[in-house]
Amino acid sequence: MLKYILQRILLAIPVIIGVSILVFFIIHLIPGDPIQIMFGKNPDPVQIEKIQHLYGLDRPLWQQYFVWIGNFLKGDWGTSIRLDQPVRKMVLSRLPRTATLSILGIITSLIIAIPAGIISAVKHNSKTDLGITSFTLLLISVPSFWLGILLIIIFSVYLNILPATGYVSPSEDFCRSIRSMIMPTLSLAAAVSATLTRVLRSSMLEVLGQDYVMLARVKGNSERRVLFIHTLRNSLIPLMTIVGMEVGYLLGGEIIIERVFAFPGMGSLLISAIYQRDYPLIQATILVFAILVVMVNIITDLFYSLADPRIKITKRVK
Image (cartoon, rainbow, N blue to C red; front, side, top):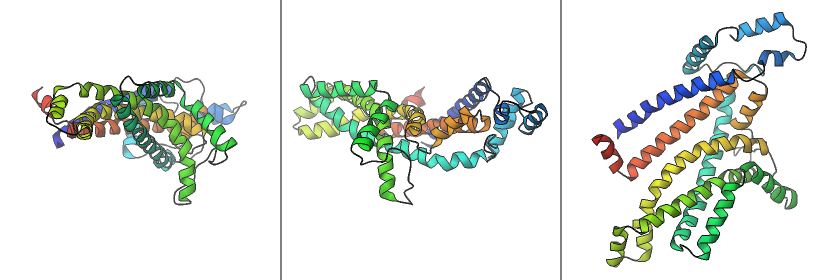
């Protein structure tokens, strides 16, 4: 198992390096110079030259990249051009909020998707199955930001039971913190839960047609045991893979959702940094997002191998 984990980590290193190269060079292709934006419409050329030299922006791009990535690995993520604050402190202060919102989104998605997928598979081709399938298709089609605005209109404007925007720390007021997280979590979880429901339904229908499931019924096992022990357990394996893949979607959706709900996470920080062309802040934030996605996929692979030991055997044979 340790060897398998080390292999996955080693395979992830080139991915992260590739992402860092793409992020760095693509950001520098965006029109607009952060120093000129800082000085406004009538900048002083001498001052601009001094500031560019201070931040190393007068060097060739390849030199800037190696300096940046070297400092990043040492723990020095640079200084925000716009706010003149350490980038590492700014990103890490918001990371727990974004991580919490992502975890709540995944948990909520699974709470919705597993019962819905089971019911849809058991009642295959019934009105219930048709209703669940149609509703999941609707949720997949609805943009998360539009759903977020709709939730604000319903629960904040008309019913006035949930805060429209903002964030409250659990240490400050736990109940208010939960209330401030409900609508962002539901907005993120909607499309993901719909996707997971459809995947679980398809997986369970496939497993229900297998010979060992029919044999379990012939042996006199109760329908509940056949469903939850023999069918659901094997159907969850493909679901785990999709969950790992959907984390990237969640993090991408959080960028917009945090903006809609004025949620002070990494997503809103990234959007502000892009508007201001704050290169060090953009680069560090996107790279941390990429590292999070890679880490989640490694953890997913680990759970996948624990759930199905044949995966490790197959890899060893190859």
